[in-house]
Length: 181
Image 1 (tube, rainbow, N blue to C red):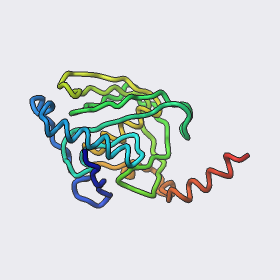
Image 2 (image 1 turned 120 degrees about the horizontal axis):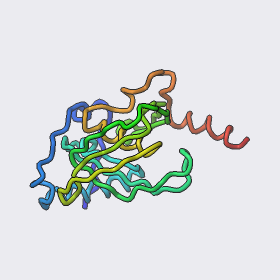
Image 3 (image 1 turned 120 degrees about the vertical axis):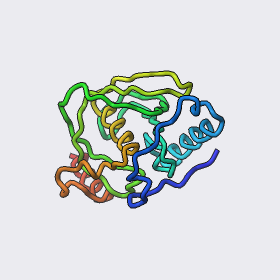
């Protein structure tokens, strides 16, 4: 397995709409190697999601793995490693919430982004089978963030108030005094 370089904001691949993956291509050996490489890359980077365009592979493939438990977003429901081919996201409720998002392709920055909090994802799994997930709260935000990469978008495109785009180290420093109270 190979740990790939994660490309950064400014690289043209991050602004392209990714190509759909044919069902018959999903179980090809090279696709399975790519998935394994993406898992290694995600774990090495310490993230919870990675889309193929982030490693300069402009195809409709994303992986998400949320360990669950306590986090800076509250207690999270875990999502075991899930592989999404050609995901289609449907908003089930327009009610939004905001989170401070970061991205492996936008290192060192965080931005406050509002997103719908109840979605359904229809996708193909690693066997090429149709699958669906319904997600709420932070996990709905996670899938929207990752799937934006497949549409050539980044979280920074969704920031409504640019004063809420900050350097991560400053943001963390401001959080620590509040948490000590």
